[in-house]
Amino acid sequence: MAYRRKRRVDISTSYDTGIPTFSRIGSMVKKLIASSQYDFFEGEAFEVTEVILNEPNNRGSVRGTFINNPNQEILGGVVKSLTPNITQTPLIGEHVVVVEYNGQHYYTSIINRKGSVNENSIPGAAGSYVENTKYGKTFERKDVQPIFINEGDIVFEGRFGQSVKFGSARVNETETDAEGNETTVVKQKPSVKIVAGHRDIVENLSKDDSSIYLEGGIDNTDNESKKIQIKSNDIFITGKRNLFLVGDEVFINAKKQNTIKMGDPRAPMLPTVNGQKMLEFQNSIVGVLTGIQSILVSAGSQLWPKVGTDAAKLLKDISTVSDSILNLSFLNFQVMTADPDFKLPELPELPEVPELPEVDLSKLDTLKAPKTVASLDKIKKINQNNT
Figure 1: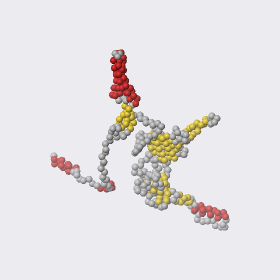
Figure 2: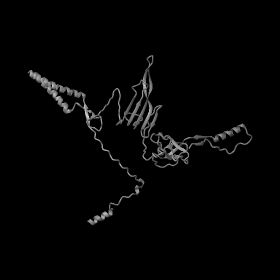
Figure 3: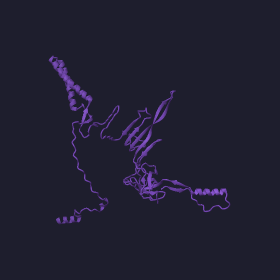
Figure 4: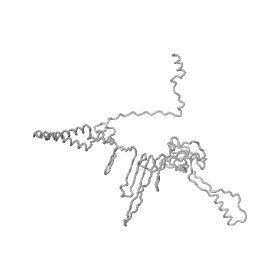
């Protein structure tokens, strides 16, 4: 696996004759030393021609050909991933760096041949080029934009437009010295950005498919910058037991009607109460009762003008109560809650599904359908006899 390459070839076939001198001896020694020197390479480039995905004990292993020495034997039969917990699965045609440990070949990383985050396949470098080589059974090449990087960033990029970036955000701050002079200072705050579906060269919460931003502060006193932002079309957070939201203030905003629902989602949803409308409804009820009482008192005292005034106000309050009941204006249909009296039915236990018999798919082409349908010739003869 590790190999040596001579730096120069000794082409000397004869040596100077005559009386030996220090210069002749020194020249001859230098030539001998130079011809015996070589460069040592611990890792060797290896072209992948086959990828083993989920075979036990060989998960993520590859087969192929060494580029410098195509006739070299693969120790262990396959080239395994050196790291068991982090697997960077190569594509067919990509080149990997291979090393040898204890009689087994391992690959360490994919060689950056084309500078592409999607694929770096160059099939045929080892001399066995196959026209129209496929990268794999399902992989298709895509033009994926590499993410923008800053000084000091550590970035992990997938092949399909996803990334995890350990970087920093630059913040311009104005500092004032003792003499009152202001200067602009660029400070850095830590950030972690996880993105699936890049839509621009720079991460963008508004454009990318799904993103999680974790942003730290410039120092311990910078509490405004410390935040976590999550954005996507749909966000699901499920706690099998409990889910706690704690904060000085909790905001739940919904732009569309009937979109805030609380309680068991399997139960019917009932509207909550609109506090302002309920207060107006209660005031109208009190006005109706007060109006009736006032009319009775005024009629008993034969204060007929006041009876007319109280009756007009009573009709207005009755109309308000009637409208509130008919229009359900005291109910808030934007925030719904599960019906507490609804009892979910118990689901019956389902029987176990029997295992299907294994079928050898390679023999399907030899199977023949039973001859239960008459041939076309027989059908034609039957039709002729009937006519």
